[in-house]
Image (cartoon, rainbow, N blue to C red; front, side):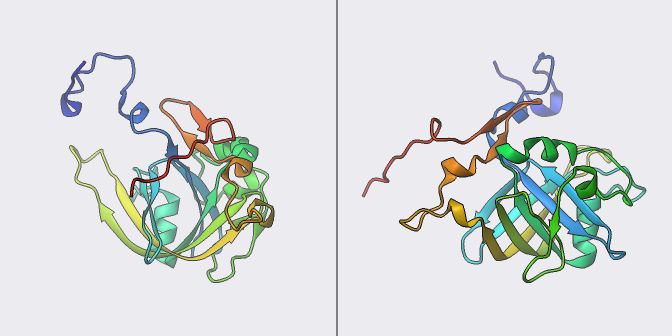
Length: 207
């Protein structure tokens, strides 16, 4: 099949685009606003973009407030920092719960029965149940050109200034045991996947 996204002429029951760029890692972003209220939300338009400095991005869609900003974006632009917590198999239900649309004064971390712990360098909280945390300093926001005023998307870039890895995930040879970590990824629709020992495979790069 062939279709043009702007014409929406795919003829399918749902837009297939989100089911093609898969699996997508989930940026489970924790932040804090100027009043000290914590926020937590998962973003599947998320990834690492470079090594030096280590930098991550996530893309935020339109929010429900008057400013059309999601709480994560508003907090990060105001305070200048955030944490990306790794969502894995053990935290999948809490991750999903934290995606609920609630008012800015609601703490999604508490709503999801999760535990906050302090970061080492920044003030945004970490999620204790997550096996990995990336402490990030906000770099910039990039507004994505869209088709209409109702489509609002902003890409947020952050420099990773501190990395926490649960000790039991480090092997004797000094590698991260991804199979033990069991990270999850977003597929299309309401589907997810996980990385485990059965789904991992290795290929050496050609010389």
